[in-house]
Length: 159
Figure: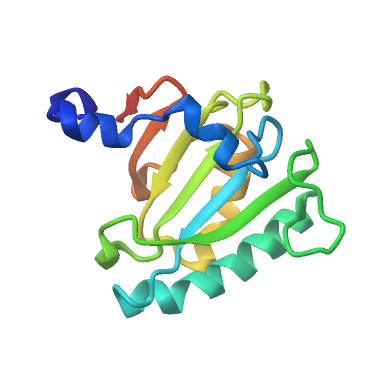
């Protein structure tokens, strides 16, 4: 899809290395899986209601699976036994709440999805355990919830 955009739009979406110094605290995670949950309640109440519930459930399930997770004062950002969980702004398709992006970093080399972001829709608390066991730990995509994905090189993932 990226290649079909006009050049002006592509430039807006392209990472600009010269901007990196403007974000000195940015960390390029290599080891910690990251779970991003759409919590844009101002755009659609469904995500605003579902996101905090999903965030709590992901924290519970990931901790039970041996990961520490964000929120602790001494929390690390990037380590093999750590997972990052955060609420983000609008990602589209609020009728598919909860929208969740699961990023498996390149350093999780035992996971076939390493270096990929998998976007799921219609995730409810009852699905979180499956997302963690199948995708984060097992490297498998949950077909029933899959809305798309992207690789490190910008490759669009489809089933």
